Amino acid sequence: MASLLKQLMLWTILAMAGATSASAQEEEEAAAPPTEKAAEDPAKAKKKKKNKGPPLYYASLGLGKTLPEGFYRIRSANRFATGDSGYDANGKKENFGYDLTANVNAIALEYGMSDRFSFLLLMPYVSKNNVAFNKKKFRESARYTAAVDLYTAAFKAKLAAGLQAQGLCSGAACSTQVEALITNNATLPSSTLTLPTGETTTIPAAPAQNTLALLPELVSNAATPSDGAIGLSDVDFGITYSLVSTRTNVFALGVGVRMPFGKFEDVPAAQRPTGEGMIQLGIRVNYDYHPWAPLWLSFQNQSEIMLVEGKRKKSSLLNPNQLNKGDPTSDAAIAAGSDGDPNSQTVSRKGVGNVGTFRADLGLAKLTSVLQPMSVETSLNYELAAPEYYGETQTNSGEQRFSYAMGFKFDGLGLDRPYPAYIRVLREKFITGKNVPLATDSFTIEFAVYESF
Image (cartoon, rainbow, N blue to C red):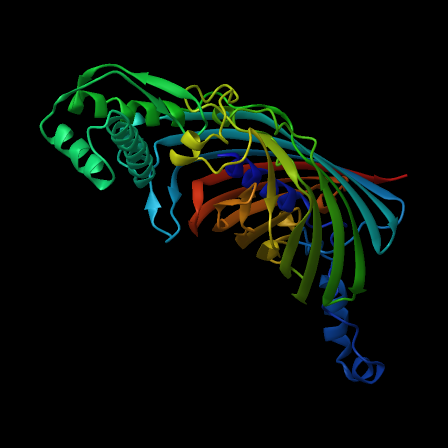
């Protein structure tokens, strides 16, 4: 469940890492050559001159522009997300019984160290992290069925070992005898069941079918979430350098480091951490194509590589709001499904993850000068995460998320009396994915002010 907050904060980061300079005025109509000007009809030339007003301003912009030297900008993005379904490894949509409501607020501070070189500090804050739980929906999911099968197999193995210890059977015959006891609904003696965390729970004496009916409740309890952790998330430090900046093409590279300021290591599973616990390197490529004064077509990709792994303490399966106090390295725990790692284990991502967007941003000044402050945008977004490991055990082969977004911007520089600020609104919808615990739709509103020192 931690990965869904990671995805929300990552898209907040990308949403704020876009255009970093004021939009240019209309440049598409170049002056005619002197020979052509001389050949023009004087009356037509006079009419053109009379009808030509001030240059149009376009509120649209690409993603790779850097701030002018000496300029700074402060941005605030507020992201509100909801989700109630996930996607399995085959891309099949499934309701796991979770219903997310989360808010992420971020502050970005930017400064233009030169006309081609900008610095960024981004600080996201998780202000709401709530998940409601529908036990009925959870029990209809494949995830629940797999967990119950694991617990049931461990319980049957425990019974078979007990029969063999009493000399009542040996080898495979003990497993056959256990199945017969269950089929006949025989009364089973009180026993102790070891969970994958090394914790133990007492199974009271009861008819076999009644005893097996207790196991699904153990699975449901282990999956039940609570109000999540809130607070500062992981912080990004980055720089962007514009290698090419012409009238029609902008190409920029960015490098950044994400530091683990968020809560992670000691947060129980039911509460979902606000950070990822790792130090990560990000390398961003931006390309903007400006074929027409009102229109920018942009591509942005951020490749992420883990530099330093994190640490995470295992949570209790009896009470997921607490950290584990059992011994997951014991033989009984391993037989029950433990990965064999101690309670404090490493968390890592192996390989390169990529997050990016294809975006079109259109200024509306061409329609009428009244719409000079307005632009509209649409984008196709993707996340291809690197596989995640707890210790040496792969816990996710890599989330794949695809979404689209639509939005608009009101830019104060397009007003009759320009003001250095803007408001941007964005609505994002999930399309499809794989290995996604919870797919989210979101609404983002961003405010920015900028000025020169």
